[in-house]
Image 1 (cartoon, rainbow over the protein chains, first blue to last red):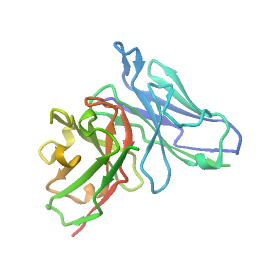
Image 2: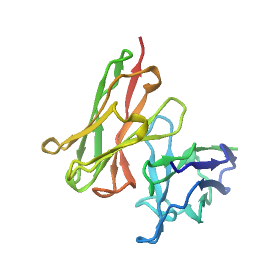
Image 3: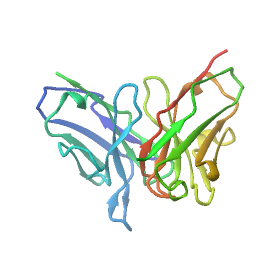
Length: 113
Length: 120
C-alpha cells in the first residue's frame, strides 16, 4: 500500500499569515495517461465530513477560495493557505487516489496562533 | 446539488452485523461510483472499498475481505455497506462518498456520516 505521510501534525498560524502543509507519498502517484498527480487535499471541520479542496495536486475544486493552492511533484506535495482566515481552522488530509487501496495521510491540524 | 444522505446511528454488540445505507440525489446515480470510508474517534480516514454503480463491480481493501459487502440498488439510488463479525475496533463514523466518475478513485462529495458503536 502507498504510505502517505503528512507534516507537521499541527500548525498554529496568525490570522492573515501563510500556512504551509506538507504531504509525502511512498511511491509516485503520477498518472502518465492523464499527466496528473492523483493527489488530493481535504478539509475536515469538527463534526463535519471532509470536503475536497484540491485534486490533481494543484486543481482547486469548484467554489474553493483561491487562498488555497496545491503544488508539488515526484512524491512531495504542499498545500498552502496564503492568508489564514478563522474559518480555515480544521484538520487537513492529503490522499492518494492512484493506487488501490486509496490511502490518506494522518492529517495536519491548523489552529490560530 | 449532490446529496448523499446516510442512515442513522447504530449500536451493535460484538460479533453482530451492521448495514448502513446511503441515498444519493442531485445527480445520475449510475454515472458515479460510491466509496466507503471510516474514521475512528480522533483518527485519520480509512478507505474500505468501492462500488462501480454502473456495472456492480466492487473492490475491497484486504483488511476487510470476508467481512465487508458493498452493494447498491439503482432503482432506489442507494448504496449499502454491510460489515459482519463486528468488534470494538470497528466503532467509527462510516462515510459514503461519491467517486468523480463510475470507476474513479477521486472522491468529490461525502455523506454526513453514520456513527457505529460496537459495545457489549
